[in-house]
Image: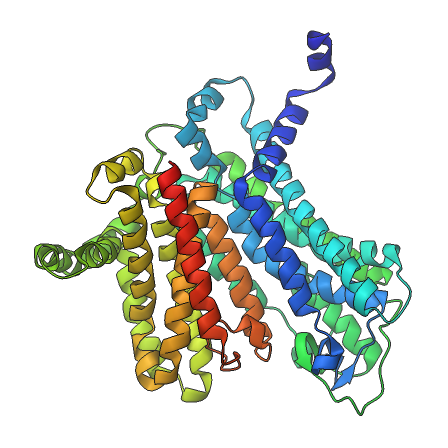
Length: 519
């Protein structure tokens, strides 16, 4: 009977199912799903608060099925397009750590089948997260909706907005895992810039002059749909997210026929282009060759560029190395040493630190919050690495437990090091605006604790990185929502927010210490 069951399932179907289940069963998946639900409730604001999901020239669009479906799908497409990449990738590292890499390299499964199953497995996983977003929006429709619940309207918007974006994200994750030079942090940084560049190239709002070929790169569907929405509402001034509106102006209805046949054709064209990274992955796949990859991909992927950066920064890293013996005599020596080791082992962290100081010094005071947000996006890369360092480097966890203080002390030093690295990056911003110190210190302490907990749960740093960038984008797009401003750079956080985030930091640190003692 077992043999008959195996015959009915092709190797591709078995691989696809395994890829989906391996991602869904990660301990961090539940936390990500809860975060998606929380962000859904925050971005679909209660109109009584003076904020709305969708406004056109200061008119609020009634919370009909069309408004809630389009608004949540648009925000979800953008957010999952960014955070989903970091959630979907990392399977190669899991194979290398678990010993499955050699098994897969020697298996008769061809590269096309393996990569296609990984891309579609990642796509199915991201679609499952989109389903969580949909369920949360339906719950909000029951609570705040101003019209009948039309499930087919939701399905239409979610399919046309999300499918091209999530396929592009899954294929990029597969490409970046398949090509050795992009397997490590270099790939994480590169995708963030690619994602940002795609939005910078999009002809949004008043820059739209009509449907053009650049919209084929609009995987999120935002530019395409905003163009059609502006045409039908008769105004280019459209805002999506937590935006203020004029309550004295009459409500407007969401257009029922937004997705015309030409619009659908553009989305199908974007869907076809979204698979391009998967085609590029086929000739670049390393197939787990030991001379090209190893368990620490960042070290394995050093090429000429990486060596050039390390060489150019070597005087600074050597100088930091000479300071380590002196640091050992200071109070909290482990904290300072942990942070300095991060700067020495990751030379790009030094580049980030200098860029953070120069960038926030040059930013006008009115835009200082945006500069701090950019600094925090870079900090998240190093905080995620600190949080997952013991799980990613073989033998480190066992070694740390044998040292004085054991694993709990290791948790405390890494938490404090991540916090002070964040404060160091924001030093010039704090000097310009001292009021930022309290919310930043409390918020960074909470975020560092979250990095440690998620690093232990997921066995890597990308779960924290995805959630942090997920939140950061929403906070930048909805600067008037005080509940999102727990790091204080928007200047709208409630007075009690620093105390609350400090409490969250203590709770997170307690969980991290419990995890360390349990192991």
